Image (cartoon, rainbow, N blue to C red; front, side, top):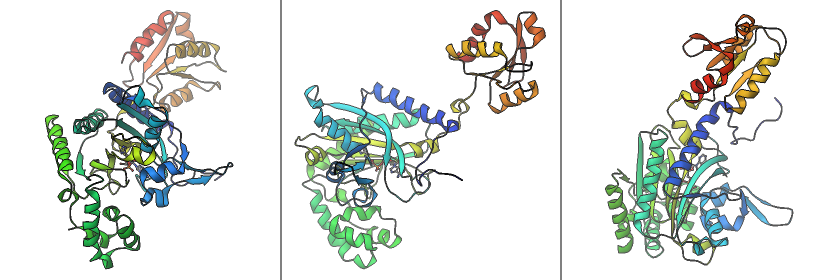
Length: 419
Ligand code: HAM
């Protein structure tokens, strides 16, 4: 084989693209219905943005970023996530001068140098939604409600919403200390990475997949036992607002999320159909991120959905497979000019039509129509054409009818585009 794609970088082929387009279209409709606007941000940013935003002592920044020095000597990084870039754009363009509250979404590829496996790639797509400028816990519930509504709308079932509170700048250091003291006594059980994490960022040990580390942390103190009264009250209200909206959730005190910017509410939506990489969505509140990357004190909350994981869970739907509306079959020899002219007219009306370019036999044209999953075949037979008619064959139920050539477009539009 010649040159192949890079490991962990996938092509999304035409046979799959219908699902992607459906998911993106639904996200736009649902999010815009909730008052969100799209923002498009660059794929490359200054490395410092992610180092400061996501946190130096996270797996992403320590080992997963695609970082390089450009020809001008600047250190740049392919974005591993979108939140920090969206926050940068909000500050850089002073979106807060228009309105302090910004509701933004963004769809696009992210890059992380992780070990590829099912559901984990080096280039993957996220749908990301963020609210900047609201500290009120009601928005935490609103954002989660929008997410669950969207996941339902694309047809996902058997999902579980897990929530936790990670405390704030005031109370989390106490938890970190408590956790560190607890784990220091068990440090002999920790893998080499976690021995280091114990010093730099003990919360990250929750995410380690090594069995002995999982055992060491199984009965560790819970963050929710350490958080301050204000964080308790915030979390209490989030739970209350979720219940008001009729949303079920599971408390998961071990969910700490892999990025350091989180404060207070953290959440994930997991699917038990996904195997090891079971999080379809992760998100939470990050009330200090803006201070890390800029000078303003702006609260924020949002989530990102992993599109590959989401799409792998979609129920099968024939409508989402790209299908040809119509194959124009011509029994004569050579490329048929009538077919060419008709195809042009159909295309202008949005009817996806294909015809034979090579003068193949009618039988082989019918085989091709079948392979292309054409819904109808229009057969331009000599005899019928003389009578000003053509044969229209419905490939779904194999029925056949003659239709007048003069109002072909109207008949086909009605049949194809209206259902
Ligand atoms: P995250 O948990 O790192 O959060 O990623 C969010 C989602 O992206 C995951 O739940 C997963 O579905 C998908 N994902 C992550 N890494 C990969 C990968 N290597 N391959 C395939 N899918 C992947 C964030 O990125 C935060 N920025 C989310 C956020 C937004 N928090 C607040 N606002």
